[in-house]
Each structure stands twice: as C-alpha cells, then as structure tokens.
Image 1 (spheres, rainbow, N blue to C red):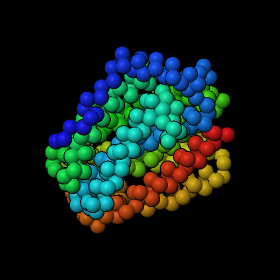
Image 2: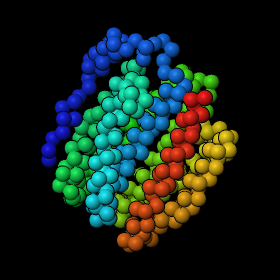
Image 3: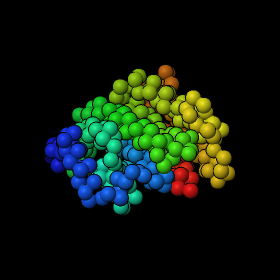
Image 4: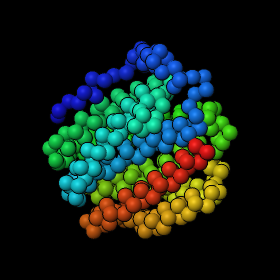
Amino acid sequence: MTLSKYMFRPFSVKSSVLVICSLLVCSPLILSAKGPTSAQYGVVLNLSGKQRMLTQKMSKEIMLIALDIESEKNLVNLKKTSGLFDKTLEGLRNGSKELRLPSTSSRRILRQLDKIDAIWAEFYPVVQEIVQKKSVSGDHVSVVAKKNLPLLKQMNKAVGLYEKDAKKGGLKAAPGLAATINLSGKQRMLTQKMSKEFLLVAYGQGKEDNKLSLLETYSLFERTLKGLLDGDETLGLPGTKPQHIRDQLGVVNGLWVKFKPLVVYGAEHDTKSIPKEKINILAELNLPLLKQMNKAVGMYEQEAAK
C-alpha cells in the first residue's frame, strides 16, 4: 500500500495551539470577538455536515466497484469524493476562501478535528490504493467496513460541536435553524449510508448486522424528512415554513417513495441474496435522492444568511 502524506500529519494539542496563535497574528479579523457571522455558520454547518455524507459516499463507491457496477465511473467518483473530503477537512481547520469557510478557533473543535485526522490517515491510503490499482479486494472491503463508521461518528461529533457554537453565536436568534441545517445535512449522509449498507448486504459482508443497520437508517431518514416538513420535538426540528423549501422537500419525498422499497427489501429478514438488477436500480436512484436533498440543505443555508 502506498503511504499517503496524511499518515505523517498528526495534530497534537501543542500544534493546534500553534495554529491558533499563528491565526491570531495573521488573521485577527477571523478570530475577532464577534466570531463567525450567521452566513458563515450556515456554511460551516453545511460543509461539516456534508463531510459525514462524504464518508459514506466513498464507502458506497468502493462497494459498487467491489460488486463490478460501473467500475470506471465509480473509480473517478471515488477519487473526487475523497479529494473533496480531504480539502474540506483542511478548510474546516485552517479556513478556505474557495469553500467560504472561516478557520476554526475553538480548541474543543480543533481537538475533535485531530481525532478525525487520525482516522482519515488510515482510511485515505486505502482509497488511494484502490484508485491506483483500479480494483477492490476482500481486504479493502474489510478495512472500509471497519473504519468508515468511526470516521462518520467522529465527524458527526464535530458537526454537533459546530452546531452548539452556532446556537451561541451568529445563529443564537434562531437555534431551530441550526438544528435544521444539521439534520437536513445529515439526511444527505443517510442516503449514502443506507446505500452502502444495502451494498454490504449484497456483497455478503456482515450481512445480518448490516440488515439491522439498514432498517435503522432508512427509518431515521423517513422520520427526519417528515420532521423537516412539519416539525419533530424530539429531534429538535421546528418544521419548515418557507414554501419553496417545502416544495423542495416534496421533490425529495417523491424520490424517496421510489427508493424506499429497495432498502426495505435489502433489510428484510427473509432476503438471502440481492439480485444484480436491484443493485443497478439502487446505483441509479441514490444520487438523484442525494442531489435533491443537498439542494434543500442549500436553501436552509440561504435562510441562515438572511
């Protein structure tokens, strides 16, 4: 396996402090007492939330390659997805004009980003080897099945920390909007997570565990979609009033009606194997569902900028 430079990019607490100190000297405006604006918090919550989705999208693409579903196309997609995750992770830490991200000044969040970097340093070289060799081995699948959820879990913790800061900062007047951006962004991840779990079942990797996970994932997606529309007190969702966003959620729901039967089939106890026809349909439908959900998140981000 070709080792990536990320294998040698640890971020200790000491180095994190040095980063903060350098930013205080070089970029006083970024770390002013006022902190990020509402618009900046919208971008941070959107893109940190998108990182969760990218962990699952990469894993899904690897499984499609393993199952010989449009391998060349998915190798290209895998390279782009992993590159975007890496660039955004760096941007969350140090800021990125291209991504419209302010740098992170919170020591608590920087320590959380350290944890993500450590897992990414193990995951990214596997992705790079797959892209280089243009194939996925059983060992690759085992590593991805083991490492993708810890990467997702730690990224999700970072989003939660950003959300707390947003509620105290630029979005303090609309805490429900911070939760809405977080959970609508999480919906993007769930489209890819359930696709990955479906494909792991099809591959025969941890079949029963992944069936159970798939059931939980699609159930959460459906509940959150309803909560985004009409509110869910337990999830902290106030419901959506702007009609153009409600219309967009309606588009998402229309795609979900077509997608749900596939994942229900994959999660059923009696499902012994998944025919290639159903795998091809899932490969075709999951990206439109992701795209339209992503469009809704962008609309919520624009609400934060008002």
